[in-house]
Image 1: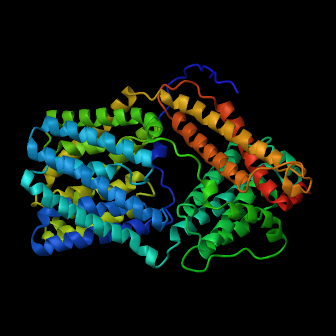
Image 2: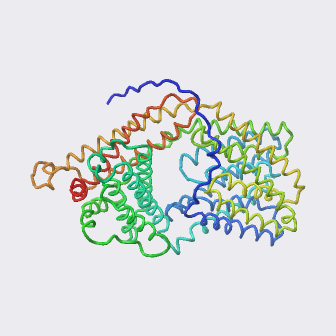
Image 3: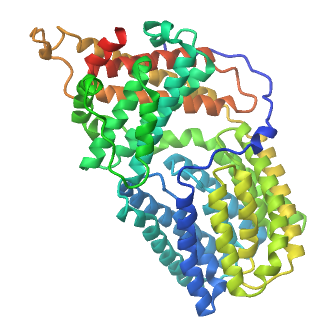
Length: 590
């Protein structure tokens, strides 16, 4: 395979969407979990401080409490580790902010430090793939801490309060595991089954019953909808395996979930012979605390026996490929980190120049914009502005109620905490409608303020942060996005060729299991390990292509090469599953 990379002509600037940025989505299937978790995690420390008459310390307790927003999709063993790292990262950020605030009162220096922290938050959260809410919570807390009056002697006590609240948030995040210990794995499996069912439906729409079989397997005449459904299903199945393999232990419920993920994989390999209704029924049965559904015995179960034996015998080790060094993952994130640092710094300085009393609001607004590419950044900017402007109107309506007393202030904040997490999965702007008044009310924990001044500052900082932040994103182009596609294509091709060689080595007559005695074949689990590496490479290729497709002034992307690589890769994935379960192949060919 040649290492030479084709050169591509530059393409015109891509159009930026507007109306689509405000379209509402379906709510997350676990929207209530982060919403309830944050209420409990924030409520207990804040009500305790209220009882002690020290509500002015709520900023520091919230630094730890808001860590409860993270890692809700991870299995509990992995969640415990992730939440511990989130709390530690929050404490480090707050410590830097508090020490800086105690050493200088220069707003210019404070904005610079806030911008550097925001860039670090963006890089680390993207590198670790911690997931929503991403870097914005870290940046919000650390930036507010930078502008809180502070002395060095107060720093240890404030950090201790944040650490105590963080420990409470860790307990809140882990508590559901006592009732539903395999809940995250069940949800990931249900998503894989539903995505596989959607792919089967898309396949049926493209290839009517009389035209299925080999022609469908080759991907002939498949449309964009069919390709997207296949990529989404492959990503969901890969995510389900990642969830199931996150821990080494394999109790009975997890083995049952593995068998259901196998069914989703077989649906990708032989969609013409799959009943999507049955996949959706299994996904629905995974909700709640009912026993994990077990596919009924019969002809279909016999067909899958070979797949299950190979997949389940391979175990967790087969799903683990070599980890990249962290420096390799950090390189592609440097343009995004530079965008964040530049945009946040400029937004803060423009806010200072306009005389706004809280420049960190502009800094946080800019930090919240930066997504995987410029198109998504633009959409987030539209959402942020709309949500904040509606939010300040909501704050104006609620302020008289919140000013009835400290208890009313705390209860209003808790209500907005719940509303923000309940609504944000529908669309970011809808969640921002609750985040904005919550942030304004938090600023009043040290004393009630005149609502008009707060509203004016918030509106100005929102517009400054959004405009300046987006201009910085345009100025810092991400030319590496195209190179990442080439690298991802190379990775897919290598993984596909490796899997194809193993398939050929496992054909009848090529290994000791065939009875021919013609020589040793691949070791146990080798084909399964190759299959999972190929699946991960295909998921990464699709994510990389989607990110690069929304960049600014990007060279023409090798879309045809990507399409052909994906089709070939998915055909090879299907062949590995059919090879592991020979009865599936026989039935599909029939």
